[in-house]
Image (cartoon, rainbow, N blue to C red; front, side):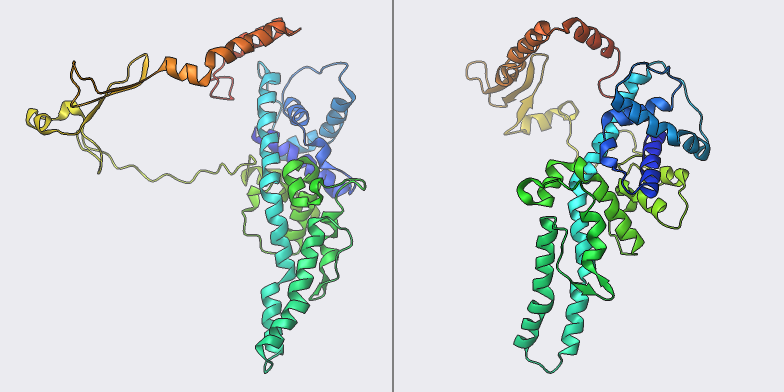
Length: 376
């Protein structure tokens, strides 16, 4: 999966660096990532594929040899590559989409705040207006800094391509943010007329803008508080600048969209036999007869095969029982497990491809449901 992710990112990096009209959002699909995985295996080519898959293959083959040479890998063989490709493609696709949903809006606000330099400009204004009254300084701050900044943020929120002119240093903020705001189709309209809402609703449409934002922050040497490997579009930075693209480095710094770099574990302290941790309770069979006699206000728990929870107080007797029982039948009744199971079987049996569905379920039953690795 590391090279599957590395090849996909290699393609996005080079296509964006060489073709400004390239739209990576078109390729942000599970089918594309699945084809990327299959091109790294020794599987037989499928004839008569759809035009969409043919386009994916064209783009992948364009960069496949260069990536394999740079990464020093060869095609590998596996028994069922199509099934594994589906699992891996879904995992990487989900990571990309979640990354855009949760971080693009945050990084866009962060970039605007960096460009505005509100605190530095306020400090310079107070220094220039020394000797003036507090009300005069406050009014000048509102008119020159706060209100123009608010208008700019509102324009970005609605993705207006014509932004208020705010010059900080020798740069116009509108010119700096133009590549991000124009990274969409000309006829694209935001849902609820809000870019931050639309990011959550349609994250795939914002992938190119996310890449442009990463380039903007890196190329202008702006500080970025978040780790670079947390953002998949950071790979675009290496192709857009003067530094060469190194796929090995991109894999080493983050082989997957999530940061899976494990910190070294501290050596565990060995426990002596019979030694208890602070706050650990004592089992009832370890108590002495005197301790059992002096126990009061106790509750005894004894879950069985049919009982999820079974409890009894120490005052319970055969004549006056004080019990609590929660059985599997109660849980099944509350969650309506039987009804939904029957409904699922009915829908499956009535489906035109019911035999194929059952055959697929039988094949999947041979694999562990808690792992995406077919060998487990």
